[in-house]
Image (cartoon, rainbow, N blue to C red; front, side):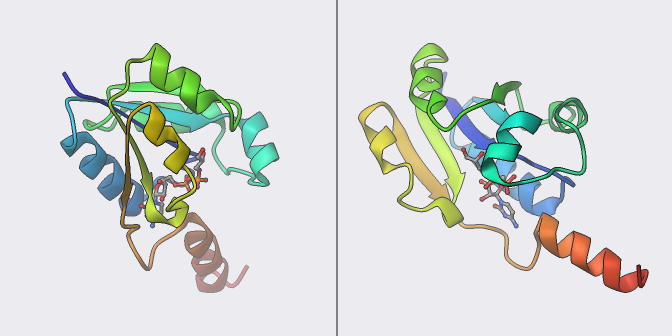
Length: 132
Ligand code: C2G
């Protein structure tokens, strides 16, 4: 039973997120998502459109996702990896090298981001399309 974990805000859920979650799940048998809380997003300098509860509902509806836990700090990853017996830590490669220190606790895998889509692009395109 290989357990995989990944983290993120997953705001305005889109196919880039789904590709990431599908590939992360394919690396093991059980996928945990550390979902950034609204408070942690403030620390990250992000303001999500959907609240934590709304983003959690969306993620829990995805067949690749087995469990959603709150991500409240940068420091919790080691504790999560140990307490959830995680074998593989996965992030999109925009984070390449940033989490290599976790190699002491589990396998670290960076997956290629899905190009041409992002929450920021969605917001910009909608603004332009509706001329708002
Ligand atoms: N992602 C992707 N392709 C995209 C957009 C996002 O593969 N077009 C991936 C990101 O690389 C990340 C995950 O989807 O692995 C979630 O993306 P974000 O919500 O933007 O994550 P971020 O805000 O970078 O939070 O502690 C880690 C942070 O919480 C990561």
